[in-house]
Length: 183
Image 1 (cartoon, rainbow, N blue to C red):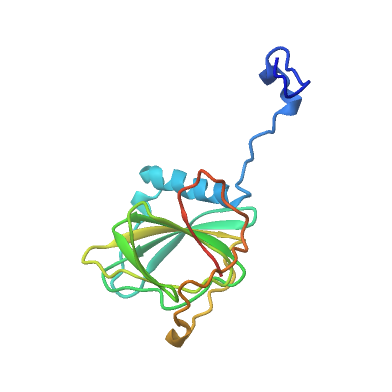
Image 2 (cartoon, helix red, strand yellow):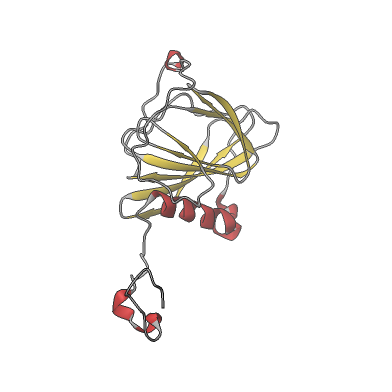
């Protein structure tokens, strides 16, 4: 008996089904959207055959939709970039599936290799570019679904290093290993 509590559990708690939460059919938290991206990334058979490379424009394909979210697959040949933009009112998870991409933000530049993930809040401005010599593939989860992607002038990339920015999306669990960035 635990002397700090009068509560005791008798029997198998798993037999009390009405106390267990039913598994969700669709993700609802930032951690669950990160998990969705990771599970899709790990299942190459789900996306690899769909990838196309286009030298004239970035190729993209909506891979999946659910209530309040979308999953997009994008390819990037060397030199292609997104231009500086934000995602309106959507939060997002960016996962590099193959190759490497460079992300430019007001806080600086970061190279994202295969497996890297970035979680961002509404209004987060960045430019993503394939600066490498090989093609790259990325997965983008937006919640709510992406309804706008305003392009911004490069002058919006001003240095604010060291200035904390609040996260408007729900917090990740403490065990998550993901770069989380604010608006």
